[in-house]
Image (cartoon, rainbow, N blue to C red):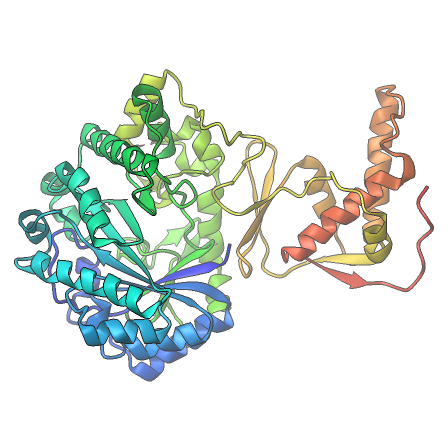
Length: 518
């Protein structure tokens, strides 16, 4: 799970969409602008920190004369670059520059299948400008054999939810590679026009059903390359599956979960780095999260890793993974999908007395209890499966590996974050490699044995003795599990896994040859 950064590249835009999430913060006249040289320094900072993905948004990124120099520079650094555009400025010249720049993906926002609907949301005449430009982009990508992927995003709301079938057909005719239906975020202008834009819980479920029905019809005929939706949470998908017999498209099970400050970061137009785009609001900046003050830290003056490892980023991680954060969320607090982190709401809402999610409440009531039956996940095997979850088990023996690392001393990597969960497990997180690992009691005990003296062999011997003592107290006959040093081999395999993921460094102690096992 590499780091992915969203960068609101500019505060300038050629449209004034009624649901714009950036309008309140970025369009103010006092927003600081930075130079091309400074933007390239931001890219250098991201590259140095091994950022894997960079999404450039706005405003409208193509209104900035610095867009192509920055996008191509980031691509040259090996970063996968995505641009999110309203499509108005996709001229022949700009399409050629997109293809030549190394940009990986172009996402075009289209919020209606008709000019009447789209223009109501995004401005008069925008539909008739955007549609030909999408056709031109797709055609040029095909002609040149470019690997640029084209996507079409639709933010589902009261104005356009009745056009979902037509959106499918329009996307298919335009031959984009992916069609995504996104949930409306109640920030910016959308927060000011809730009555006009925000779906009721019933409307949200109806929209999800429409997406599911169309998806099943098209996929069964192999008529659509890729469909994504972020309308229905997994519990609602279970409800739709049970009531309507409909399988929902890739439901962002791994991205509904909050990843702010874990693998996802957000950069403002003037180069400040935050865990997410919500926390930049005035209601959070300068105020504490679990005792750590949310502060503006600039990529122009500070190293990415220094910000990423800062106290409030660490507290953000705790806020996300702590089940107590969501104790007032309904019905989330009792949902298995929250426990496995295949889905969880924004933790920043935890300051409210109660945060209720209407469509999930309807689904929970209909399902009679808050559960999931997706068939491919369960609580024991999928803790934090919405993240990258390493389940290093003691299930693989390797005598040669034990001989290689048994004399090595594990050292915990720097800046490792740790969060104890109420179910007896512990989550450790490496913010630099954005890897997470779930520790069960025995592996947490092994983690606590790491110091500057204990070798892998020392830790394995202690675990072996504990297990043997338990066996003796329970009067369990030796079934051969402990024979031949199996425990030591499995412990060695476990520490090698932690080392591969960057949680520990294995330091050599001496060259003494370990005695053969068995």
